[in-house]
Amino acid sequence: MLSLWRKIRRTGRVAEPPPPLPEGERPERAALLGGSVQIRHVDAGSCNGCEIEIGSAFGPVHDGERYGARLVASPRHADALLVTGVVTRNMAEPLRRTFDAVPAPKLVVAVGDCARNCGVFAGAYGVAGAVRDVVPVDVEIHGCPPRPEAIVEGLRKLTGR
Amino acid sequence: MSALGVVGGVVQPVLIVAGSPLLVGLMRQVRARLEGRAGAGVAQPWRDLRKLLRKERITPRGTSEVFRFAPLVLVATTLVVAVVVPFVATESAVDPVADLFAVVALLALGAVALALAGLDTGTAFGGMGASREMTILALVEPTLLVAIFALSVRVGSTNLGAIVSSTLHDPARVISPVSLLAAVALIVVIVAETGRIPVDNPSTHLELTMVHEAMVLEYAGPDLALVELASAMRLSVFLGLLANLFAPWGIATEATPLAVLIGVLALVVKVGVLGGLLAAGEVFVAKLRLFRVPELLAGSSLLALLAVAASFFLA
Image (cartoon, helix red, strand yellow):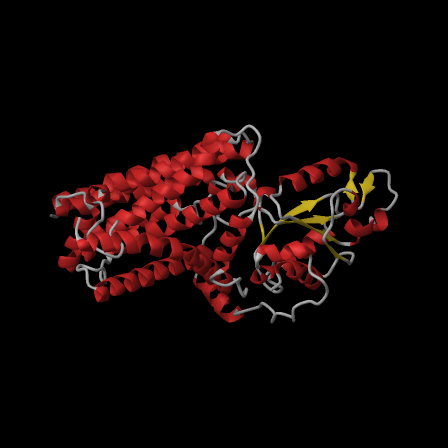
């Protein structure tokens, strides 16, 4: 316990100073949320590359939570869905149902090239389409996988902080 | 009903409702700083609540009135406790309700209402959370009663106002073995009852490890806001009770504006410090395996029994 305390003292703050607020248009409904966005992450058929980057976007260095975004465990608690990966046939219906379970006003963020336009999996037999083909998408974040900075930037468009 | 009691009965619920989300924000902030993060700010829980109140209300298919009324029961019982327990003033607005047994029963009623709501959703996780919550509640409530009872033996009354005033008049009691044993038992009980690490993890995403969170998975919008507010209020109520049972200094004993102001400030400082310590302590411990939790609670129960025994033999 003492060694942990010493480690905390020695490490100090590892969060990087916040970059300036991203430019570009914000989805209109995001203003209704008033600086607090609860996020439910849905893996619609991802290779887990985006998941690792989401994990580090909420880690100590990029600290997505300081802008008012928080990952939650239930779509009923959520304001936004963070969808990764191509939508596979098996996940199309669960994704639609998850979207229906979110109370309005709700937003969808498509993370990664697969979610935007199927990426390298375009045309594969198990793929139902991009996220936009199943549920309406408000914000898109590109990259394969997107850098944590890009994910944080996308989330800040929702929180406005 | 005295003037001081009325003042306390008005100031306390306002203070607890306004301050408890800030307490949760403070605890998240302390945790964030110790983890090297920047944190979302102390006011973030209020922003969350404001947003939730504006959102759509969803009632899942197949749920009944039990699901709809549980958040109201939870908030109402906690609010009654906030009115009657001596937090800011030693006298209570409704003196008979400021009784040890009534207060513990009110807090248990809220927890039971939420557990029933968890069952009512009919989901696997709701039922699992409810069963776990009841297991923990059944082990915690006797300890809570016995620990405060140990303090009431010397006073000869189970009225919380009387217990607090008597400690105020005789400060040497605080360092007696009875007080120390009861304090340790009560701290473990509060950690278990408010769902903090090592008993439950309030920020978990793994449904299988959830206790409190699993019961509220189906709540959305304004209902969720009520549940979150009530959980925050319960945390402040328990910490306020702990602070005032063992360190009641600063609490108002007369109905002058200055005394009430000092009482408010003393409560804010005491609960803030306790919350900060609790959050800092959470960084250093891991969550206990569910089957190990009864051992921890049995230990605290033993300490509470020893406190009662000591209060008879050492008095």
